[in-house]
Amino acid sequence: MKEVQVYSPATIANLCCGFDVLGMALNEPADEMIFRKSPSPGVHITKILGAQLSKQPDKNVVGVVLEKILHHLSNKKLGIEVEIYKNIKPGSGIGSSAASAAGAAVGANILLGTNLKPIDLIKFALEGERLASGTGHADNVAPAILGGISLVKSYCPLEIISLPSPKKLWATIIHPDIEIKTLDARQILNKKVSMKDAVKQWGNVGALVSALYRDDVYLLNRSLEDFIAEPLRSIFIPAFYALKIECKKVGAIGGGISGSGPSVFMLSKNKDIAEKIAKRMTEIYTFLPIKYRIYISTINNTGVKYNFK
Ligand code: HSE
Image (cartoon, rainbow, N blue to C red; front, side, top):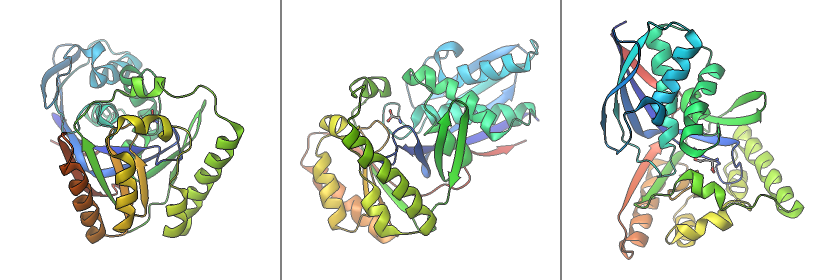
């Protein structure tokens, strides 16, 4: 195989109540990467468009994942070159580093014909997340690789459960043009959680999982609540509560901070409502001195996509 072209999706981590354990893959936006075998051993990042990122492999999420895979194969002659087209802005809260990491793991696996299992691809992708945010959280990379909605049942050992995606689920996401590094957004969180908040939170996680199995929108609406990260992180997101309240008035099932922010997501049952939510988000942000982008997407049930020649 000469070349593998990869489309690696944005993801919404946490889904409000599932800090570090729940995540969902989107169809839009997605990063693109092209992987080729190189006669020169090691990893070579030849082009990066769309973001200011290091081309030095050990300082780049894609590079780190590729290096780990080459090291695992222990064939010192293998070389990979990669072009990276970032459509997902770093620090946006919709899994930019995860898209890079997941795309790298899948791209290398196809290019080199290594037949790694999805759980192993996720483990390699976690190394990229570790570089970007200081921790190997799997709630973005798992759905990016597997598609749909993932639950991280445990980290040690890593165990991922794919949950059912409601057939007609849309996400509307507003990305305010401010950068929040996941590393920083994790440092502001309390190291201890009160028993009262923990009980409310795990009640919601269980209810959300049940809502997905039952395709129960009303239960989903009542489960999309976060008592742990949202009270601390929402402070950095302009008009966060206005978005939450107003989007529900035009039909949103519910939503909250996407990953560690600043993006805010709202789920809905159809395209018409998803567009109404986008319009309401625009009306709210029109009055703020801040640029923003809005994405409307269905759920990506396949994960990273690729073509090869
Ligand atoms: N679970 C992670 C966090 C997701 O909230 O810090 C980051 O995208």
